[in-house]
Image 1 (cartoon, helix red, strand yellow):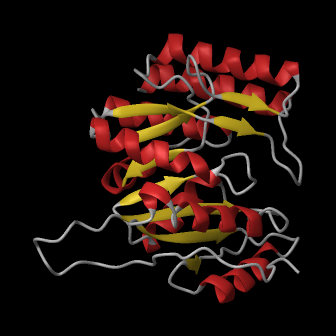
Image 2 (cartoon, rainbow, N blue to C red):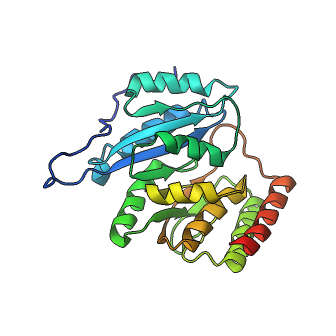
Length: 266
């Protein structure tokens, strides 16, 4: 029942142009690491296909690479049903034998990715695909190497579904990072909704040692230190619809340790 019989958006799978005079084809790979996302996965896939099938993104060819870490809720079985529904050229499965971490999930998916542009996002519906148009517009207008979504842009962005305490923790975490790491334009270092030029991701991922909430921060800081152009667009972040989010004392302590380490090593 995960895949209803409603009409599916028209999607453009990967293609290439042999005519040098034709309009260049933009190939995009969306990397979706999953762990216990059985309920969220059909919705996020539908929204992604819809986003790439309408408006200014309708000419973009794309693939969605699902990296599932042996989810006990059988997320992979749902992913296989979605692959049958949308086709193996659009939905590509790269499962792993266990929960091995976000950084290695990205590296694993990147090995199979065919796109020159890589979208990183969460599968839990906190990152809405409707903002992808803004990411690509920003890249086109600025020739950025990385475009990151920010919840804290002046005049845009925001967070829904979080408690006042968690919002304060996130704000303080990003403020500390701004002071200690001076990451340039990026105002939301812990956000995970991003567009990367492929070569940037291939260079940065092997350099990152952090885990958890610090991982995304180190990614953007190292990209900035290497001289890549980082721009941002406002997004609305919505807490996951299904499943649980975890932010406790251990995660906060890990973030602070990572922040100090990056201060001395980048």
